[in-house]
Length: 247
Image (cartoon, rainbow, N blue to C red; front, side):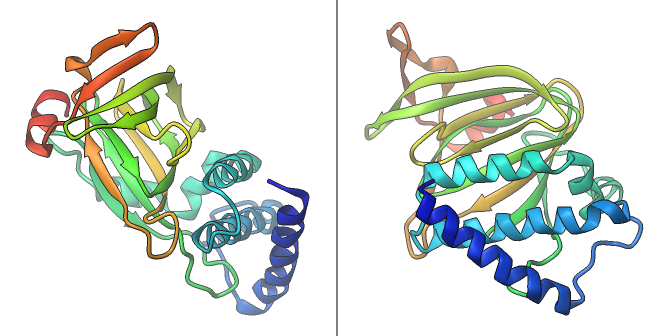
C-alpha cells in the first residue's frame, strides 16, 4: 500500500471514528472487555474502509489482502467470536452431510454505513471440506474461529476451457486464529479439510470491484496432471461431482 493510499485510509478512519462515537454503535454489552471495545471497533472500521476502497479501485486486491491480514491480526479471534455471538450462531447451524453449512452473520456496523464487505459463518464437520475451488473477480478472507483444518492454497497461472494451471503456495494444518486470503492476484485457489469440527468467519468481497463479474470454479485436484516441479494442470468439475468426491 502506498504512503498516499495509507494517508487516505487513515483520514477516512479518523473521520469515521467521530461518527462512530455519535452513532450509538455497540457490541453486545458483555461481548468484549470494556478496555478493548474501542480498539476492536476501530479494527472493524478500518476493515470496512479498506474494503470500500477496494470496491472503488482506490486500493489493489493485493493491497487489500495485506491490509485486512494486518487488521485481523490486531484483534483476538475470540473478539470476533463474541461479536457475532458465536455460541448461538454455531448451535443453530447444523453441519452438512457433504461440504459446508453457511449462515450470514453480522459484525457491528462501521459509523452507521452499510459495508461493502459481508460476513458469513462456515461450519465444516470433521472429515468434511470446503471443496477445492478457484475464484475470479472476488476477494475473501477466512478466519478460523474454532477447530482445526488442513489448508491448501494455489496461485492460478492460467485458465483453459476445461482446466486451470495452478502452482501450490501453502499447505498446513491450521487452527483457531489462523487467517488466509484470496484474490485474483494471489492464492486464488483454496481447499480446506476439517481435521475436527471447525468453523470459519469469512469476509467476502463479491465482486471485488463494483460492477465486475465474478465466478467460482470447482477443481478436481486428485485428477491433476503434473507439468513440472511446481505446476499442475487441474480439470474443472461440477458441483455435485465435487461434493461427492471431496465434500
